[in-house]
Image (cartoon, rainbow, N blue to C red):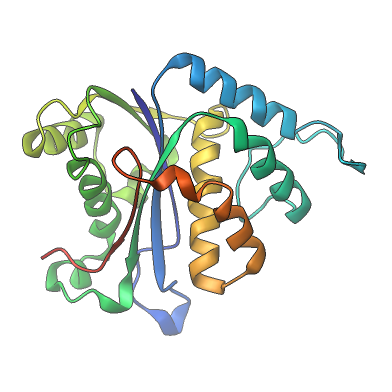
Length: 220
């Protein structure tokens, strides 16, 4: 089992200075290497120059929800419909968080959410290799791979077999997680109907037990 995670939104609570109301962590879960390879091929298809009569220059950048052209986002999510994976999403509505610890240490929020996402799996996520964008380790407040693996396995032994930091620029599945988290965040934060349409293409993937769509409010 393999999981790729990314986030959207910030963990700050200074709304008058631009902090987002919501922060989203999304994990794309694959059962096999073959499923990952198939998803990668579909993502490469989304980079092609023509889709339904629309012409694009071949897209050679990483897919990031907040930076990808709207029409290309439509193409991306349409192409991914036949991929085989599950989605685990945890969402924090920060206006409802009352924990003094999180309010005074907002940098801890994302790492706490990741831990929650992998310690409430109904026992179906087992011996999973977890991939994280190495550029996000500071934002996630994860000092090293062993720290996260140990803290998750202490609560739920056998959940993670390895945690690895990778480069999102060269890892398409991290980009898939970014597009997933970004669509969920945009749907909630802005109410953008396009974002809702993007979410609806993978909403069924959040069905339990392997998937989840969890609106988290506090650490109590």
